[in-house]
Image (cartoon, rainbow, N blue to C red; front, top):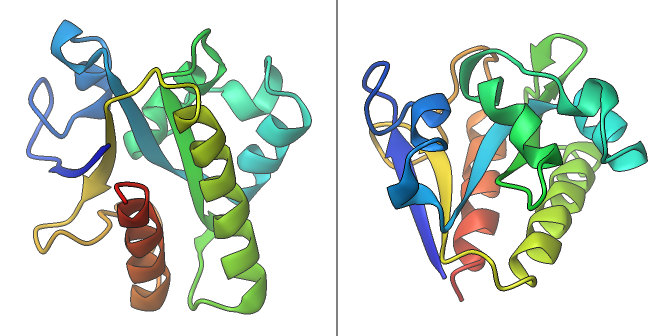
Amino acid sequence: MQVIGSQFSGPGAPGDFGWMIERPEYADALFIFNDNEEQFRAYVEDPTGGAGCSRGGGNAVIRPYRCADPPRAAGVPTGSGGAGYASLTDAVQGVVDEAIGVVRELLASGRYERVIYSAAADGGLGTGIFSVGDDVKRYIVDELRKLAD
């Protein structure tokens, strides 16, 4: 399993998840988008539709693809209540771990060769809508990279 960070450089190019997810060369990839906790919880409660499957902003534009059959995307929360997680509290770590568990379940299907997440220039987690604490971003990327093991 490859875990790949993809940096956004503009629309209609690698890093633009809305564009990439439609391209045949990425058919073997599971895309990881930055979710909010509320819509992640809505998805966990009803993975077939509703708020957990609605299009979002930034790389969450691909949120509807997590409700596709088979799923092409999975969300990892980076914030709640309209704000990014400021630091990696026990509660935040629990939510991230739950989301990574969903990703692990999807990968167990054997459908995916790659996991692609939104990366910053330094390879860390790329964020745009929420201001997210560095320890939170580092933890998310570390947990995603463990999927390659």
